[in-house]
Length: 246
Ligand code: UGY
Ligand code: MN
Image 1 (cartoon, rainbow, N blue to C red):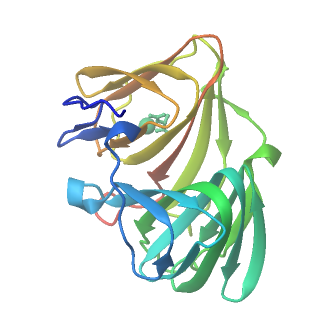
Image 2: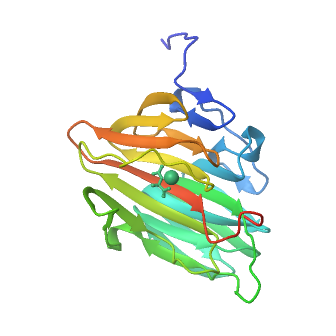
């Protein structure tokens, strides 16, 4: 029998949110058939981005278009097909697709996905970025801030056309951010593996696989990995724009 509870690990504040699986409630999105979607971050909580957790089964179908907001889908587990403006891409575990603005797309398959969406901020003399398809398993793990315990995979090209980054951050056990970051960039984040302690503003939380975090601009943030395995999270970040046009 399911136990009744009046407790959750979810916390939603003005400057950040920790959203945990025990409190998820599904949404219906027009054009998305038989899809289990949890809108875990959105402008409704004060964010400038959205993040969805998505479960696809064989009868599921996502039919949608990017209008003013670009989209990024990452396969946590399973396999799916993504058709963008008629071109089909196969994505397996670790696979991802970046869909620029004004594209028609469809996604089918049996998979667990995380998606990030952010309104695109165009830049004069720089074209809108193209579709990007890849797999994180093929990406180099670069040392972060020269710390041998911190490894970063940058999944999207970094040029001035892009106003959006998605990275996978791996911490070896005991690894930690070297200082408390406070920056204009906003993050949407999903824990993929391991556990640790996240500092958000003046609060500290034990976080683990499946947890979602939203960090507003200027939310002080710090993390240390705990336990015996690497701690891994995927996160997005707005980049490459002036503070008044971000
Ligand atoms: O890219 C970043 O700002 C990253 N170091 N932040 C974070 O992991 N909270
Ligand atoms: Mn940061």
